[in-house]
Image 1 (cartoon, helix red, strand yellow):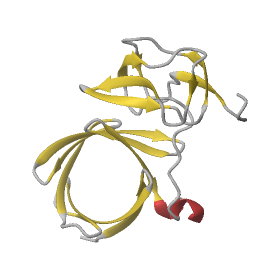
Image 2 (cartoon, helix red, strand yellow):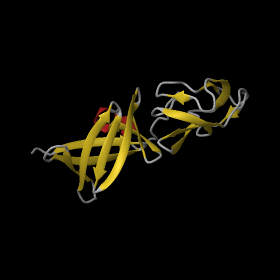
Image 3 (cartoon, helix red, strand yellow):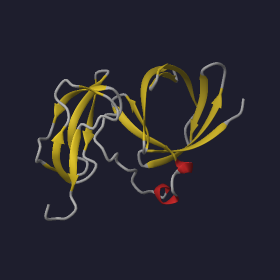
Length: 175
């Protein structure tokens, strides 16, 4: 079978992958500098994949965003983009964009709200903690600003695209 080459930006790093399809739902995946890994995959439903990577079972959830694909695995979220389709300035080592809206990467339940209306927050500060499949993810502030509205509550069921916190972006040092 034909080997396919991919260049992906995962969070803020670009990686090259060689993918060789094998029989059925099996792939051989080689990351630059690593030994090949055998990957079996099965689509459970829209946005959910069941994988077996070198004999270890992994569930992955994928949500399409305007800035790329948000992939949730083992309690961590990864922003994945096709590096070949990004502007050259983004591939030269600059940080990947943080999503500009506070939205969960997959269907989840709100377990903690870390801010209140009127709070001033810094870029990267935790705002809301959501849980999916017994794994928690902290959703962070995309920029410095002030919380203008909280659009969720504890134990609320939320989905990708639901904006959980509205922020007014800080435009000067006096705000």
